[in-house]
Image (cartoon, rainbow, N blue to C red):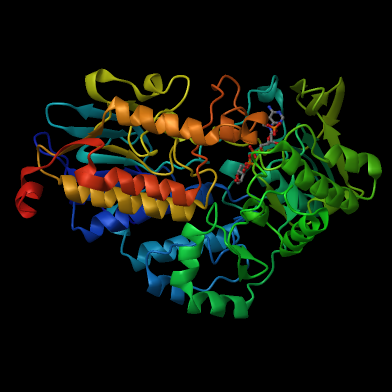
Length: 563
Ligand code: NA7
């Protein structure tokens, strides 16, 4: 097994005792912060990471132009003030290499490496009811026991090339945006195809078009995309945020819907008005102001944009008109203008020169909305009987989101219950943190929380702290056990259902709904109540000694608290 900077021999495997107090699966932002918290408690912990480096999504998604669509000052850890004061981002939106530098800096700074084992994909986790612990197995042959298992496997981490007919016949180069090679890919002199027009395509297409001789883009559903207006980070803005970082973070958590508070470099709480309760003039001024600010700040615009079709139409039409203005050829523009689903019901894209790229002479757009890709041949892609011969195909075809990575691990809980079976139809998890029948198992950024819809950094930090407090309460002794019963889980699922009633999210075939993966049950995978409501529900879950959970506190924990 290859591993970088790991210390796998420090906890030799043992048949009769637990090897670890906690095993964490996944070395992205969430898993690494969890590791930090567990280390601070002086516990025995190992983090398994499938990649040969840490970073999770950012480790794998290294396609040209890959960058985060949340502003750098907000897409960063908030738990350590010295870190957020000392780290300086270079751009308004950090690119993938800078994100990797940041995450590796954090691992160094908090001395996380000794407990990280790289190049180790967890394949199975089984709960043992008599010893009340988990056995975790990796593809490298490790089999370890831990009191608690925490799955931090990411919600955009499980990407595959769709099963196009003739895929194996194609003789050219193939690339998947979410598994991009580490060495530089040079498309100079090539004819290139990109399949897909989601965020990864929107970011990579302008770069590929600059290199390639010819680029043909196969588009099934046009996205709504807003100019990111990326650039060097405004140093005055940086200073101002740093001077008020605790308050800025509070505003992110409590006064925004999704954790994004910056609009035009100003902290701007979410707008609580209906889009149709204000005059057209006022509404258009708000939309224009956000257009000039750039990026995803429409999520904090009018409160009913995702619940009222008429309100949604006002924004959709505004963005459609802006889109038309960015493309020279009216026919191409009309193909690029998104129609048929509400704006924001698929995640908005934030772009740099995406639409302008279609004004280049070497770029061709092929709509496959009404005529899907028939097959691949040795030479290229066939649509409507026409073969598009290309030297390389880039699949920007997305992820089996939210549940995909968990479903690839064989998780078995009490009574031999298989997690995939338990989640048939739709995932179920109390607060998105625990599932009934799976004691001592936690999810970070998993289904039934709002990971897909809010700033993942803020959500996962909050969840980590919640789990950390819960584990402290329950303890680590032989008898320690924490489990959610079916009833509180069902109550949470009902609440999830109630807050999502009337949401326009149901009207699009998005990864939020699992609708982008053939055969995946169509179900809302995330909580729509917003970050503050989620935090409130989680706080309630801690009340009166975690009364919604069945907790067997370990003898040590009980003694320590005098309970
Ligand atoms: P997305 O946003 O899921 O985009 C995937 C794209 O691939 C999208 O345009 C899909 O069309 C298209 N797609 C998927 N399967 C096919 C097939 N079989 N044929 C043709 N086209 C296909 O993934 P990204 O990686 O771009 O972004 C994911 C998230 O990362 C994004 O939301 C941001 O949060 C960051 P469709 O729309 O399904 O018709």
